[in-house]
Figure 1: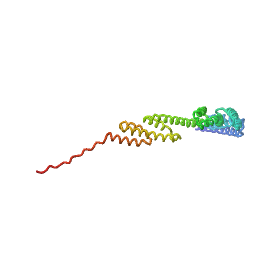
Figure 2: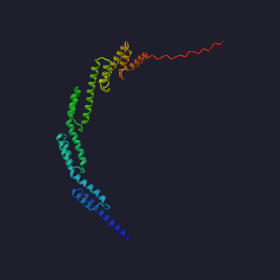
Figure 3: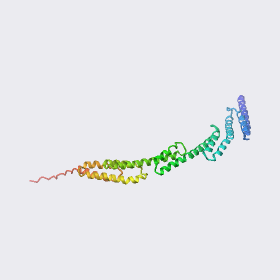
Length: 288
């Protein structure tokens, strides 16, 4: 019992000593200078990590170390921000170089990286905005291929890359729509039912949101009607061939429903429904 009491007393004395040392360290740190913070850290480091106040001492040491780093590195960040105010490429590059002196793991490193990223993005916008505007000017004049090639140097990851990608996708879709519309008209010129059906399918690839679809829709309906007219003409000599032709009319065209109805009529003509057999009435035998 006595030995246990002695151990407790010894532990209390150690903790009292650690509390006193930690208070002294905090008093030094409150002065806020690098030398005082360094002295506070040295004082707190005398508290073993295994002691009851060891964890608290480590937390304070980390906090004071961060304060020292902030005092040391803040001038770099302040100078960098001052340089960046000019907002030209050269000044922004100097600002980045200044802020880059704050090394990884230092207290102000996250703040420095955030500012460096923002300044880098600004430089990229200054560099790439003229390219974007030149490409858009070409596109506005109908030169979509040149616009796409002009804007390609704005690579992925740069600040304007998303805008550039959206423009490329829009212009590429427009080029594809133009090519599909041309191919559809060229195909339709052959005039056969098969060619007209293929022309319709090509024209239907033009997105509905594209202005060329307003030109394509009447042509699609016209071509579908042409196929139906050809089929009706063929029915004078071969209903089977007329049915095959009418079946070429794609869905989504004005003549598709009429074609399906016409096909049913022709099929009924070729295969009329069989008459239902009628039962003869049973005549009862006449009485003798």
